[in-house]
Image 1 (cartoon, protein in one colour):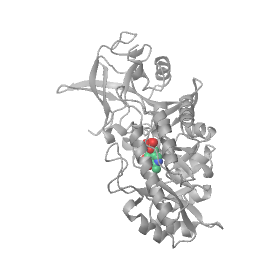
Image 2 (cartoon, rainbow, N blue to C red; image 1 turned 90 degrees about the horizontal axis):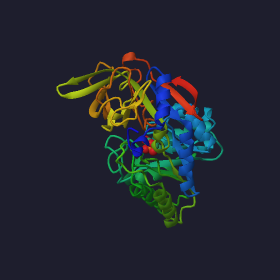
Image 3 (spheres, rainbow, N blue to C red; image 1 turned 90 degrees about the vertical axis):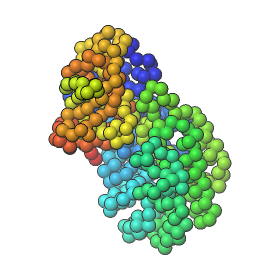
Image 4 (spheres, protein in one colour; image 1 turned 45 degrees about the horizontal axis):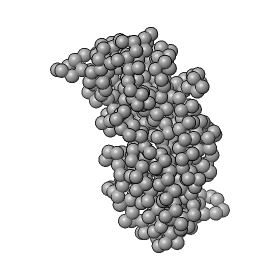
Length: 419
Ligand SMILES: Cc1ncc(COP(=O)(O)O)c(C=O)c1O
């Protein structure tokens, strides 16, 4: 055993399976465990009140086998483009279980959402105006309004807003004026609300604060505007650990808290929608890249990998590294007190990629001191905001493979492509 069990929890596969995968796939790849995805969905579902719907946020990982897995579990889907809408339909999802969001939806996005019969979240009066023209049904189109609340919680200022200026939604202070204007478009009716101002939050209490904010705004729509809300969407933001020392999000506290939030708001008879992306998909995936060379530069130890920000961009954008460990094909996990005894002590390491830019950093980690070419660095929690959130085309290197595993067997291998 190289690492404490709490550290190994950060990797989708155990030591034996990681060894097999790295031996079978000679170039950089993502590998995902579909059974883990199914288990996570079921666990979360079981802990939430019956009135809470669960929509998987496709942006966190739009891989078809993953969408098929969640669709088979009866998940709803949160889509943010025409491409995501068609991916969900191809995976067996339906428009009646789909919400479509985005701060600058194109006509193609709106048409795809209308065609699917999805619930569209409007971000401003322009969306209402365009839907009034595009919608051809006999009944007014029911839409949700996304509201940028006056206060919110953020992982970093660069990810999702709340409490400040934002490209998303209607500012809470402008909501009354927005609704007065929207009422002029009789082919569109606001019957839903979306409020989401959290990202990677590990504290259930803080998530529930966001949910209470949504209900507070919903109550205003109900009381001041007479809107009978059928859907309040509180977004995602359920966090996962990127380091062993971090706590797990307390799902029981979240489920019990949501029950209380609903009980505190008897005026609301609709459904509450939770849209987790990261929590469902991050722990199902790993990214694996071979060491090409190592060096020490002015006292800093670098390990250069075959994949860089063309495969894994998130650490550069957020300053937060994925957890790492090292595997030596033919041997197993190496470093520290590993069973193989190989690799030497773990030492602080800067991980860089093959791209000709000093921006090409994929994180920092404690890795074995004698890491050498051919060894594989494994990044945990890489099932979300990784494979498709990278600069795949930059410098024309090969895209990573995506390996989907079910019942311990590889069911699909494909390069990363966008929908
Ligand atoms: C509208 C919406 N819903 C859900 C999510 C998923 O968030 P997370 O992956 O943090 O759960 C996002 C993330 O950006 C979002 O913008």
